[in-house]
Image (tube, helix red, strand yellow):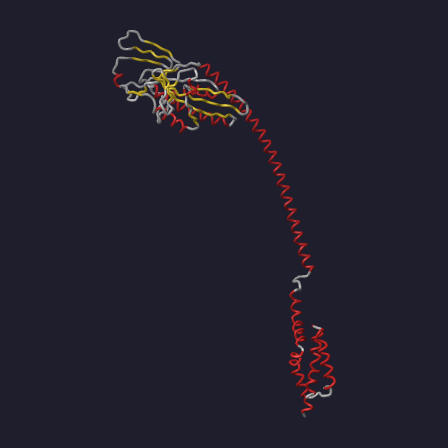
Length: 384
């Protein structure tokens, strides 16, 4: 019984050999000699014994083979992992699908490029058309500008002729309102637009005088300015102009020339008009700048009212070159300019004015104008 129990072990090895040999053949050839040797031994000893014991031994043969042929087992393990590695490396899509996708994308890109080319062509055409229209507009603008310059030149010459007809030297008369004590005197004055006749108390014969214009008592500051504003325009045209008020103390000279904030006189109104002319002439190529000086003549001496210190200036033919010039570019600058000058004037109290000026004040306006298209003007002129 014991002697018959040994062969089944060999028979079991022989039964297990085909599985191991087949697996080893797929994975690793190094396991083949050991498998074949085991199989030959099994065939030599246990082929005839196909007993239950042999079948039982065959059932446990894989465990025995696993111990004896570890290299084959490892090869078997590798063979089981190989299909998994093969699946991971397989591409998700076929080459035909990828080629089709690439062709579709290329066609879309070409179509987009064509659209961009069409848009660029339209844009280039639009730019060319706009350039042509711009050139036409520039030509038209230059023609209009040239025409406006010619018209302005005609208007300027007509204006100058009108000024000459009115007279380069004009004398106009303005009455200030009578004071209460003056109303009680026995005096009579009768005047028209350009003549006046008056008779003083104690005089037998009346006196008569003629002027270019006589202002009424009811005339305002603007009414007075309307009579001299054509001379202000001549300043911008390049002519020297002098406007001054003459009269005894308290006759209203400062009120006529300087005025007040509520009732501006000739000087502030002249500046406002000059600014309006500057803005209008800029549209046809004129470049105009203003500056001003303010001096005082007192006891045969000249003082610069814009200087920080009251310094007596040297009398000479070129005395105005010593004056400080203040650039004037807006009306606020005019107000500051006049306020600064008024603060330094010599004043004294009179019967009708507690701060009556005791000197002659001269406001000098310097106008520098030129036309960048025609080249006209360019000469500095003064308005005093």
